[in-house]
Amino acid sequence: MTAAAIPARRERPAARAVPWTRLAWVTWRQHRAALAGAAAFLGAIAVYLAITGHEIHQAYDALVAAGCPQADAIQPGSLLPVASAACQSLTQGFLSFYGTTSGSLGTSGINAQTVPFMLLAVPVLLGAFAGAPVLARELELGTFRFAWTQSAGRLRLAAARLIPLAVLLTAAAYGLSALFSWYFTPFLRFGNTGGYPMQVFGNLGTDFAAWTLFSFTLAAFLGVLLRRAVAATAVSLAVTTVLDTVTMMALRQQYATPATITGAGPTGVSDWVLGNWFTNPGGAQVSAGTVDHLFAQSQGGHVGLFPPAVAAWAAQNHYTDWWSYQPAARWWQLQLTEGAWLLVASLLLITATILLIRRRPA
Amino acid sequence: MNVIEADGLGKRYGRKWALRDCTLSVSAGCVTGLVGPNGAGKTTLISLAVGLIRPTAGTVRVAGEPAGSRAARELVAFVAQDAPLYQHLSVRDMLHVGRNLNVRWDHDRAVSRLNDLDIPLKARVGTLSGGQRAQLALTVALARRPELLVLDEPLAALDPLARADFMQSVRDAVAGDGISAVFSTHVVAELGQVAEHLIVLGRGEVLLSGPADYLTATAGGAPLEQVILSRLRESVPGRTREVAA
Image 1 (spheres, chains in turn red, purple):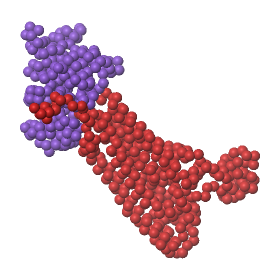
Image 2 (cartoon, each protein chain N blue to C red):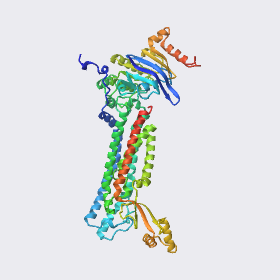
Image 3 (cartoon, each protein chain N blue to C red):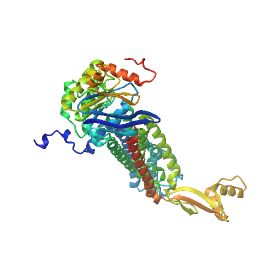
C-alpha cells in the first residue's frame, strides 16, 4: 500500500496555513460591492476634477501664451496690475474659476477654495463608510461564528481584510490627490512665487491619502469595539472630523518650531504666518492691538488703522515688528510629519483591531 | 480515543460561571447529544471546544489538539445556531468562500450533495428555507472533511420534517466518513433515536454522561427521556416537581 492510499485525515500532517491569495479572494468577493461604491464615489469626483481642471488649464495656458503679466506682482486682496485690454480679458477669464467677479484674489472662489475645502471630507467619509462594516458586519450578523472557525482562523482572516482594503483605499485616495494637484497647479503658478499654500495642505502631498488610511483603520477598529457598523460609522465620522479640524487649526503649525523675523513680515505668498507682535523700546513684548491703540492715541483718536502708517509710526518710536511663521520651504517637512503620525496611528489601530478580535469572546 | 476531552473546564462572564469545573470526554466515532435546559452552558461548552472563546479555567482538547489551535481548526467543523452563512452570496460563492478559507476541501462532494438536496447553486443563500440553509451549512462543514463535526442547536429553527432529514444527514456522514459528531439540544424528545452517547448539562455542570444504552440500562430500562428529566429535576433544589416533560 502506498502512502497516497492512506486517507490524509488519518495521517495528521502538520497543520498548514491557508494561503493569503485564497483569503484575498474571499475579501474581494465580500467587499466588491463596497469597493464598487467607493470607486463610483471617487470616480465622480475625478471626472469633475478632470473636466474643470482641463478648463482651468486652458484658461491659464491662454494667459501664458499671450505673454500677460503673471500674478507674481499680485498680493492677496490687491487689484490686478494694469495690463492690456486683451490681457485683462484673459486674466478675468482665468480668475473666473476663482468664482469671483471683482478679479481680486483672496475672496472665496469655488474652484480655488470651496472645492479643496469640500474635498477634505472625502478621506473622512470614505474611511468611515468603507471601514466600519469590514468586521462589524460579521459580529452583528453572527456570521463570525462561521468565519472565525474555518481553518484560516480569525487573525489571518481579519488581516487579509484590513490590510488589502486599507492599501487599496489609500492608493485610490493618493490617485485622487494627484489629480487634484494637477487641477490646482494653475492657481499656484498664478498666485504664488513658489511653494504651496497651506490652505490646500490637506489636499496635496501625502496628507489626503494619510487621512484616508487613518479614517479607515479607525472605523474598522470602532466596528469591532462597538460591534455595530452604523454606530461605528457615526462615531468614526465624528472623531475623524474633530481630529482633522484640531490638527488643521492647532497641531499642524507646531510640527516645527516656527521661524521668526522682524520688519514687514514674511515675503513669500506661501509662507504660513502664525503670529505678529511687537517689542517696545524697553524690549518688552506688546501685542499688535496695543500698538494699534498707541498709534491711534498719538494721532489724536479716531483715525483709520492703515497698516503702513502704523508700521511707520512703530518704527519711528522704536517698536520692533515681530512675525512668527512656517516658511513655504518646510512644506514637505510638515507633510511628512503629519503623514508619519497618521501612519503610526493607523498601524496601531490595525494592531489593536486584530488584538481585539483575538481577545474578545466572540 | 476521545474526540473531546475537557478537564476542569470553566468559563466565567463577570461573576457568573457559565460553565464550571467541567470534566468530560466524548468518544470518537459516534453521535453525541449535549442536553440541558436553556442556560445550562451548552453553547459555552461548544464555543470553548471550537475555539470561539477561551476558558477561564481548565483545558479542552478536540481531536487530540488544543481547542482553537490551527491544528484543531483544521480537524473540527462547526455549524453554529441558526446556521449563520453569508446571506447576500449565491450558494456557489458560499462554497467558494468555504474552499478559500480552508486547507482541506472536497468541492465535488459538496456540489453533488447540494444537487441531491435540490438546492440550486445559483440561489442566494438569503432566499433558502430554514431547512435548506441548515443543509447548506452542514454541506460546507462536511466539505472540510473534519474529524469532528460540532453543531449548536441544529434543530431549534427547523420544522419536524426538516429535523428528521437533517439528523439523518448527520448520521449518514458519521457512518459514511467515520467521523464523530456532537450536537447540543434542549429538546429531550426523540433524542434516543439520534444520539448514541449523551452528556446532560445543568446549571453549568455535567450531571450525566455516558452511552445512551448504558444510561437506560442503569436506570432499570426506563425510557431515556425519563432518565434525563429525572436527573435534571434532582439538580434543581426546591423544584423537584414542576419541570415539564
